[in-house]
Length: 313
Length: 313
Image: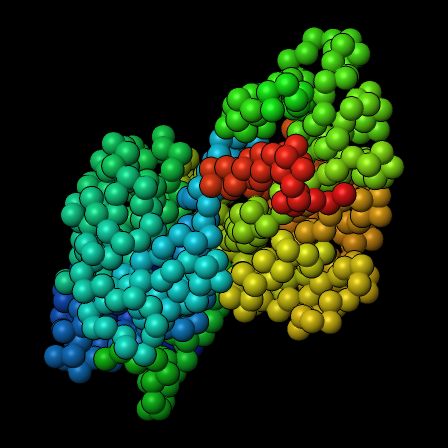
């Protein structure tokens, strides 16, 4: 399969890169000085694109690659792939569901605990020597807080299962009510926000869910409410969130994603009620290896005319 | 009851202090310039001592207060109280069990997530601007890690319940096997440490459990093992732990308590695999209020000749 051209959209994982290089003719798109010339030169040999949460295959790239057969994403999110265009052209799309569910759910709970109990702030307090001068402030109990989940898919359900162990009442909003669960359904995100203490974004990013957490939702969540985002930056109206935090109209936020990563609004740096992570949701050694193997497995299956492991399109 | 003298060992909670001041004649021991003169002057009016995790009633204090009837601790831990002396003199002792169980268990899980997923380190990474230069390193998955608990009392059980939601296999060591639970029992702490990934100290501090985590246990836990201490600093041989961490003979540690609080070994400050908290286990607004009410309720019950709410002796 070494003659098959695979275009890797950006650096994402050394092991994956190495394996793709061994098995295919790998083109590292980020190392290409002149992208349009490159595409013109190689457009007939590139049959696969490997993308991730940062970069995938938009309409322009797809049009530039007439021999493209498959887009394999090193992520579960598909927002960087023009799915409609792929469908139109018969291009297969795969992602990495399930293998990262637990890590992302773990991180959501970690963010909740870190925000409510001010873990990072109190660790800073110790390291700065301030503990010698006085006790740290009191924080807020996590057990029993009402957790509202936007999107009750694999990740949303995994978050719910974990939060339940802390006696957190669970409610959710999704496109359709999930009658098979016992959690309380709210038909709108505003109602969900008004009835929970911790609001978690766990749905996929589409045109419909862009800015699903907007000013109205932030107001409904209120001065004691906490927002946790382990979805995608564009799920949240970031400027609105920032002013709400700075003006203390919302109680706190735990954010793993931002609208323009790796840019993070600097007004947040001075706040003690936010935890800011560099998009590490699935970032463990174990999970990234499993994700890489799934990408490789999907590509291999495709080029051997076998059923794809985790097809989306 | 205003003529009853109550000695408060150290500052611990403004609400509690205020309420004691309203109901009794409150003596704030930390404001007394000359403690032995004070004790000689007031020894016949002091009938109660209110202590906490930092300071309680040792043999010397008890001997100096011949009218002492009750020691009410603003903590569940009793290591600062000479229980044998209290028993000998017929002095009642109360503590604050149950109301703080969930907060302490939440913090234990928070520490596990913070250490394994490097939450505080990655928050620092974002705030320092480093994310603009490159992605954060990969960390270690929490779900499924084997959790070993030293002491399966109220707090140990609450930790187990939470960790189970993350599919963590649970094992424990305690003085006697708890046949009513399904968790795996190890007859020694060394065997427990050898068979788990995350070792949590959740037992009470007594002469027997001082340095229960010693060099042998640290060696058994090993280079990938993580120690979580939400018990008392003296549970762990701190110098041994520090060298193990500095020499990377142990994988990491999440510590809420230290042998000589608020002193924290500065060799730990440069490490990225430790989380250091200023003894905040029960430090939430909700729980400290509940603990204060329990102290007040116990004192009231005692002086009205009613059954104590949470007696230990």
